[in-house]
Image 1 (cartoon, rainbow, N blue to C red):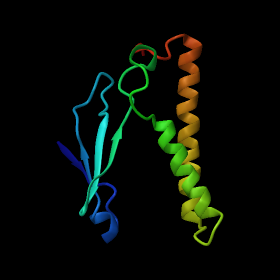
Image 2 (image 1 turned 45 degrees about the horizontal axis):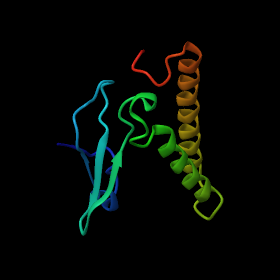
Image 3 (image 1 turned 90 degrees about the vertical axis):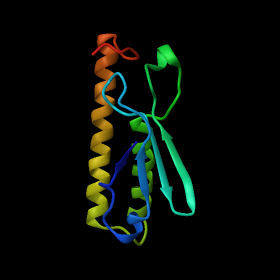
Length: 119
């Protein structure tokens, strides 16, 4: 098990522990993470899609789904009293990431390799 620490910036984030629960898979990325916070042990288990949906079915979330959640939250902050340039920059970066991932998927669909392990 490996621990991630890049999220730690302030005392609140010091209380969040992020563990990588598995070894990298076929594509080189891990698929399972656990976020814990003191009394809230096993607060959140994040399981990413492992394998092509066409072959193994839906068995986890995608990057695109998590980015959509983060964008929604930041849009909410931007529409309220916490609106700021830093939130706007973070939102723009996440929206760009979403565009890049969608571009990759569309290109894979055009090549007929989406949903497979073919690069």
